[in-house]
Length: 578
Image 1 (cartoon, rainbow, N blue to C red):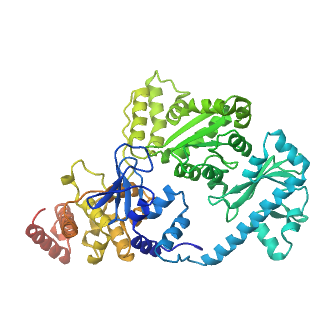
Image 2 (tube, one colour; image 1 turned 135 degrees about the horizontal axis):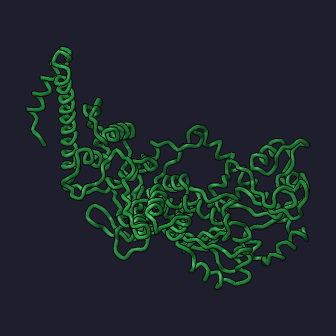
Image 3 (tube, rainbow, N blue to C red; image 1 turned 180 degrees about the vertical axis):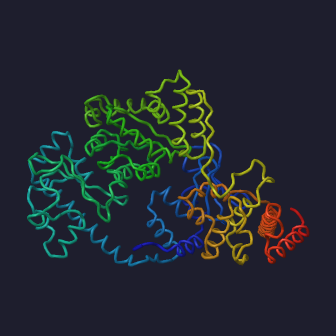
């Protein structure tokens, strides 16, 4: 994949970076045994539950479940994108980030696109100063000069080639303009995508213009939709971007909340009236990428929708996107507006204080969730209660383990008088037992290898226990291969590797499992666990052959199988049980 950063480089980078140093520059840490601790920076707490392990290059919060490597910490705390976090850490240790598959050429193209889009934004701003009708539109919406400047608002003239003539007409320039989504081809040749529209630049996390939104000023037969966004480009994917997130970040060192509204002017009007935490999706329903981006920036998110049927439908789509990301400490609220009103009109008529009062009365996610699912259900009947439980189950199973999930189940029990047991998703790793001494062999082996990836170099394939029919064997074999293939891999990198898989949640817990003693004791326990797995494999094979003898007689075995069975019985009898 062009531009991809090799996994081996990530392993080397994480091996060189001191995660304690990275985090301590942002969060005060206190030494606690082999690790370091602090109050978690990702949720409010009174006593420290946030730990940083230099040996594992891993951080974990036992309160909210936040975890990851130094890269993940920068992404969550500094709100960096993955490549930016890698570049930042590489610069600390004097490494140059390699990009596979011609990544450098891709970066050069992107640099050209950023420069071109910035030049286009400046062109639209200059044209706004010349356009009386565009100024009249913004005046009618009550925008002052400072707000217009803050958002870089502009105007696209009603001409087929005004931008092209201003920025250049060479074949190379034209190709870049088309790649940026600023011109397109039609039956009568190339023409500019935005014409006779007031323009709203869309910025990325660094404040670079990556796209535009435009509102038509005069509706004609060929003027197109009222609002028009840039087409998808290499820089712009509307399902992954939020309008004005850059401005929110500029206004707040630590964002207290985010308010999701539907339109550009809703955001801008809220900002002008002192509510500087508003963002907007770009003409799409709230996506899973939007939800992740919102919570990466702030723990409290307010969704603001019309109170009609369409608004509540949009709100429910937001619920479906948000639920899998509702870790403890995160909150989502829903504000439904009166008929005929939007945030722009409300904040202009009621002012900042009036809108703040509406936000205080917003509906919590849990309340909207149950109201939506039980709206057409008769909870006075057993059938209705069963229907509510049936509707609830697949959604609540998406909520991460923790207090919020438990409270959602308790609320279902209160409403439907049914205790809904939710089994964890299938995983190759068994759940953690209540007492450490009851750890299974596979759980022990996986946890020790996860915390000490170097142990894999002492194991030579093939593995006898690969034939063992037990949950977790496939994962252990896969982990051994991964650690042998990537000798520099750390605990944090392994957890990141499995983050999107079913095993990811179980591995997060195993990464912080406590084992007594030091490395020598852990290596001995790991080796002993593998030997016991080999013994269980021998017992399984012996039992399989014995079952065939009981079923079909000794004659059903080949000579080799008879010899194997005798050997297995001797080996199993000689090996001491654990």
